[in-house]
Each structure stands twice: as C-alpha cells, then as structure tokens.
Length: 491
Ligand code: MSP
Image (cartoon, rainbow, N blue to C red; front, side, top):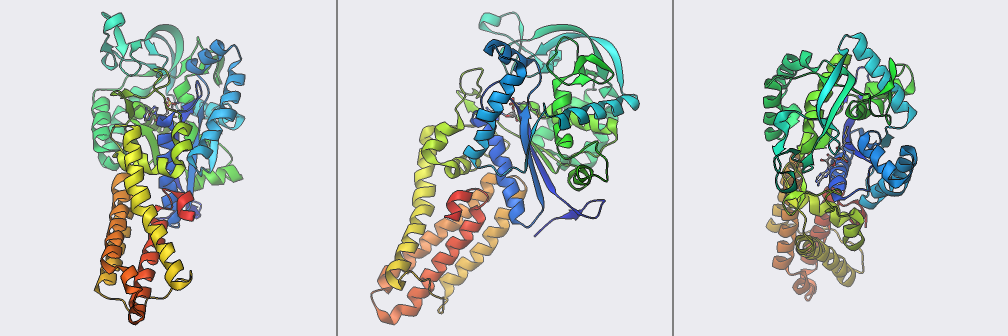
C-alpha cells in the first residue's frame, strides 16, 4: 500500500509531516496537544503502511510575545524559553505519547544560520527592500493586521477596532523595516492553487485563501526594528527578522535547507523536502498558505504539497487559550483517562477541520461506551474464554461458516475504508469504520454464544472456530488502532 516515491537523489522520499511550532510564552494546553496528536496518529499510520516517514514538531521561541512573558517573569528570554521547553514543551510530547523524529527550537544555531542564508537568497533575488511600516500589530497573533482583519470592539473596547482572535485592540507600530515583496507572487500563487486545489484543505480553507489572494497581496515587513529578541537581519543586524518569517522556515531548516548537498544534512533535505503535510490551526492558515509558499518561490525552493487547517477546541464558544484563562493542560485529562483515550477522543469526537468543544461528560461517556464496553469488554471476554475453554492456547479455525466469512469480508472493507479516510486526514471516519467492525464482532459473539457451544463436546470445532475468529478480529483491530492508541494496542 506504500505510496513511496523516490527523491531526486534516488533514495526514497520520506512522507514529511509538520506541526506548527508552538510559542513558548506559556505552557501547552490541549489545543496545542490536539495538533501534535493528529500529526502523531497520521505519521504512525503512514509508518505502519511501510513508508519512510519524518515527523517534525518544535517551538517558536522568538518575538514580542515571548520577550514580554520573559520580562514579566523577570528573566532573560533565553532563560525563559529554556525553562519552559525543558519543563513543559518536551514533557508534553511524552504525555500525549508522540513519536516525533525531531524537535526544532528556533534559538538553535542550525535554524538561525539557515534562516539568515534563506533571506540573503531572497534579497539576492531582488524581493527585499527597505521602507517605513505604519499600522496595527497584534502581539497575540504576532501579525501586522489589515483593516479587513479587525472587528469593532464591544464593552471596554467600544468604538475601537480589535483583533477578533484575541479580543483586544492592536498596538500601533511605526518603524523602519525591511519588506518582502509579496505582491510579486499574487499571480503565481493563484496559478499554483488553481493547478493544485488539493494543496489547501479542507475546501473551506482553500476558498478562504483563494479569495484573500485574489483580493491582491500587499508587501509585508520581514523585519522588526523595535524588537531585539530574534534572529538578526544578516545585512542589518540592528534589526531582527520578523518572528513569522523566522518561524515558518523551521520546516525547511530542520531538514537541512541551506546546507551543502553532499553533506548528511543536505542529503536529508533532498530526501525529505518538500513537506507532504503542514498541519495548522485555522488561525494560522494565511501564514502557511500565502506567505510561506511565496517565500519559497522567492528563494527558488519547492512548495509544500498540502496545508491542512484544523478547527479550534472551544470553551464557551471561543478558542481555548491561556490568555483567556480557558486552557486545560493535557495532563489534567491524561492523568485520569490515559494518553490512548485522549488521542482517541479528540480525533473521534471532532471532525478534523471543524471546531469542537471538549466536555468531561462527553469524554467520559465515549470512554465508557466505545472503549471500555465496546473494545475493552470484547478483549477481556475473548481472553477469558480462551483461558477457560482452551487452557489459554488459541485454537485453530477448522469450521468456518457463513458468519465467519461475513466478518472476514467486513474486515477487508474496514481496513480499506479506514486507510482511505486516515490518509485523507478524515480521522473520525477512519476511527468510526474500525469502531463499527468492533460492534460487528460483538454482535457475532452474541449470536454465536460460545459459552453455549462449550457445554457440548460435539460442538468443539465450532467453539474453536468462534474463539479463533474473535481473537483474529481483535488482532486486526489492534493493528488498525495501533497508530491511534499505541499503548493499549501493544498490551
Ligand atoms: N508560533 C505560531 C506558529 C508558527 S508555525 C511556523 C503559533 N503558535 S501557537 O502556539 O499560538 O499555536 C500553535 C498551534 O496551536 C496553532 O495551529 C493553533 O491553531 C493551535 N491552537 C492553539 N489554540 C488552539 C485551540 N484552542 N484549539 C485548537 N488548536 C489551537 O501560532
């Protein structure tokens, strides 16, 4: 089933998936863990298909937001990020059981050097110029805002324009910056996305991006002169590179962009880039589907194959966030339910691409009905019966009938349907397919009544066939659910 393709060097190109790199102004909440979990499930799925896979995640350490958090904490920005990365962001990967291949920090020299090389290249290509910037900037978003991005404020902000994501007015900037000539890429981006409509998903995200680009792209600051916490602009080190134009590059720098092609890093770049999937939340779609490909075009590098924008985890109808004090730490849920149930719940209960709300009641109800009663019960009944009737040794199936054949056929279609859904990032449909197979196996147990068969030695062959069929079905479920719930499925 492998969809592996050879890279230019002849080696198999890795299926390369990235999560956004998370701001380390604060500790992670389940909104962050959601993206990482989805990426982990998808990459485990592709690995299990026999593909070579590279899964990158990491942290975004520069910018005003992080600088201010450090200032408020009375430490240097470097101390602030070192502490949070060590004590919060790396541990959360263990908490959610992520099997990432690399973890990039934007303060690492490998990143900073390659970012500088990238912008030198863009400048040499003639897409950078110096000009004054004046306009609104949202520090929460770390974004230069356009009038169309803002909304009228209410309550204490009545009469002012606010950032709709952060619910507060922007800061007014006035600085002498370096600009990236984004406007030069309007037509090329439109042509690219018309030719590759699958490059932005879901469809609603594609439409949003296309209408933004068709509205015409304005040039955008690529540096900040009033910020010091960042990567110096190589040709004017008194300024730093605008945090997003540093951060987006992590996807390429982490796999060796800008290194000697004959070095190990250069070979990795050839076998990994471009990314197959950038997973992002819908709030950062424009950066990934407009600015990022334009930057790559300007540098002459290949474009990512797909950006998938997922929805938000909501609290009281609003995006869960630490700044609004609505963040739930992943461990609050995982300490109680375990990492497998956490992974299962968020990918099963929320259609990937849409917003969803977390509630303890819903989590608890699905845990009981789908995991404990549906799957857990089946597994414990099966092992108990093999123990009781067959001394713990799984018998062979020698008397297959109609019911067994039906289950076998259902398994074949379940595996195909789950695979098609998972590789399309339709996790909920993929999981539901497996869940329905489990229900069918439970139905089979009820119909076949192995405990009745066990009463009469004349039924021995049927009893063994039924027990074998149940266990073989469970083995298949363990494989299909392994990327989703690796701990329990190993058990
Ligand atoms: N640092 C930037 C990303 C740079 S990528 C080159 C950033 N960081 S973030 O920490 O604010 O957000 C990272 C990701 O977490 C985004 O995809 C964002 O959508 C996601 N989430 C943050 N809160 C979320 C929810 N409440 N729900 C779902 N995802 C959320 O943006």
